[in-house]
Image (cartoon, rainbow, N blue to C red; front, top):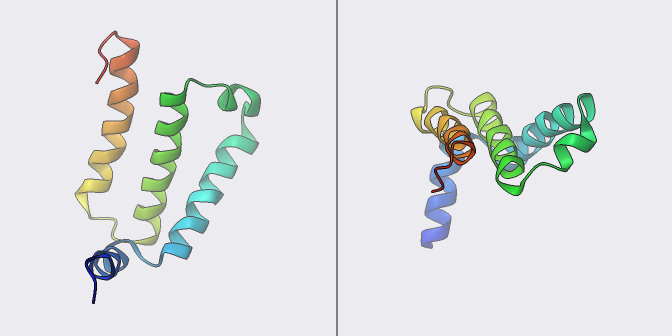
Length: 92
């Protein structure tokens, strides 16, 4: 088994099947982008748009996989902090 296979198997056991996480991610993104200010969200600065997308992905991993895996929760806080810091003049 290759290193990539090992990693994919480990991630699958932690997060669930990738197709399920992908479907959940897109459902969360669609709810966000379709339900609310679509044009506004699509015109956000790149860091905000990517942060929102990554937060959607982390939420999906929590919903489909191990909700007790602390890294997902920390990552959500981290993406939010990166944007908040930039807005306060701190770029990382």
